[in-house]
Length: 184
Image (cartoon, rainbow, N blue to C red; front, side, top):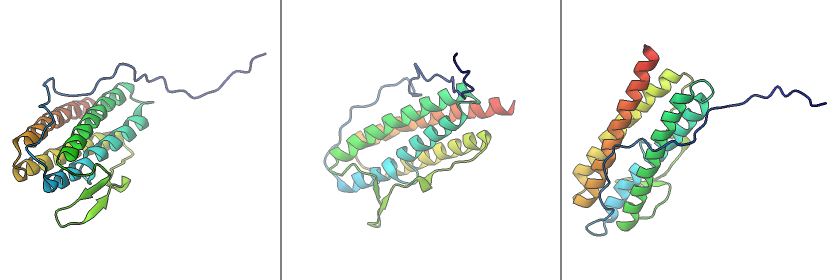
């Protein structure tokens, strides 16, 4: 006789999820010339406190913690994480083309090297706070990218960063809709 399982299960399916990105092509990945200073600036976007690796890790953590309660929201958040993975990949390509090393160390302008840490993440318990913190993190990323565009004098690199900003703005719209849904 087969024993009845009192198993706990998560039936949230992540099949078919696509990256949450604006439906516009990315410019070709190219740089005018090697420039280690620019590569170092992009290393901060790659793995600094405000970075793509921080965003990916935070979104994956949030998605995992809410999938039991809110599958639809978890699926949306995973789509955003997937877009952030695409951004990370593009930044890695740019860093390499500029002559930098793709690693989990942000090279700051003062010469300091800072290894990425999960201490950069915000891991609140409440779903509403998660969404709020994600919106704030997207705003911080946009601000940092705009600052780097002003500092980088390579139109090819700047075009990629400007295109990434469009996705980040789209993520804010999605997250704001999730926030409004939770409030209503």
